[in-house]
Length: 95
Image 1: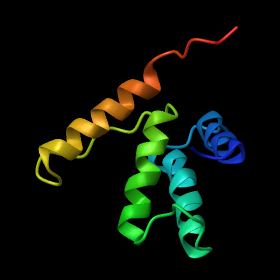
Image 2: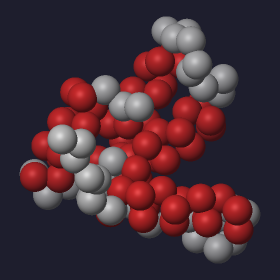
Image 3: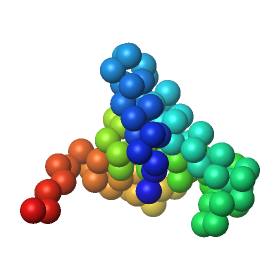
């Protein structure tokens, strides 16, 4: 789960009109930082940190498209589409 400050920085980027990849960069930056400081449960490689960061960005509502057909496997594209759908759906508040 991303930190509140990371989500706020991504939303600030969106308000400023920056591209979705820049907004998602905030989530990737957080994962890279966790990896470098060796937090428990963090990614083991840079590639893994990027993948987790992009997934969290999609789930947080960043309009980041899934990867192109020749770049990754069908399973990865499907997972990215599922993350994007999760980010677009409205959450029900518990009261």
